Image (cartoon, rainbow, N blue to C red; front, side):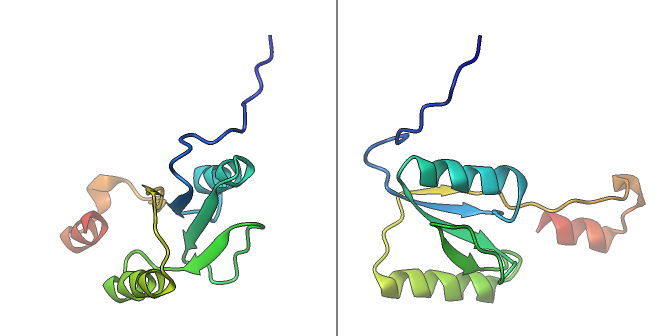
Length: 110
């Protein structure tokens, strides 16, 4: 038996979403799903050249306080009201945890 996903708003009161980590995978699929459901989506990625049709793209490096603050100021000055944040940003680490130096470990935790 095949069940199709209904593309209806998750919550009719939530119209503007911010999705981090939207370059690929779950983040990109989330952006596409929300757009198909009729929502407005602010898609955040470090990739300044990334385009997702229908989404408002923002090049933001979530590892940088300055980058986050600049994005927040731009959102505030545009009058955008965000209803929900889907924080999907992450980083792939290829080496085993026990091989990390203390500095690398603390950098990844911060």
